[in-house]
Image (tube, rainbow, N blue to C red; front, side, top):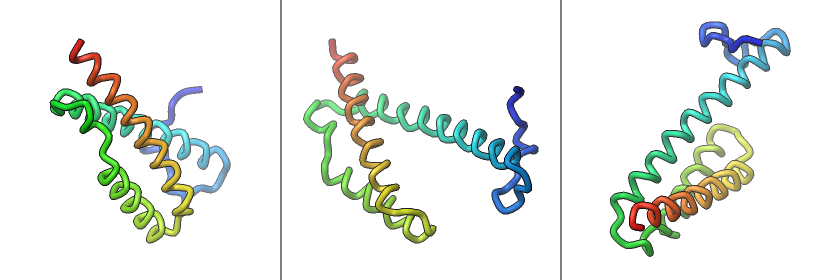
Length: 107
């Protein structure tokens, strides 16, 4: 099955078939993966910039990021608690990745 072109993707409210929905979901998943690739690039940058390994984990920053996401999800009418849980996991994975990168750069 060929990848749908972006101009073939309908907005959710314009979808008329499950094919439309699936094409939109697939395109959104790809966009999310592209964004994750960028986010993890920033984790590599942070690992390069931070001089002290102990500064990789910043609980104050983590709490602020998750609170902001939860608030934004709430305003958008999304399941805010569940979205915050996803972000908590994302931040933890990002911290673990950054620690691996920090160690790799210094060995």
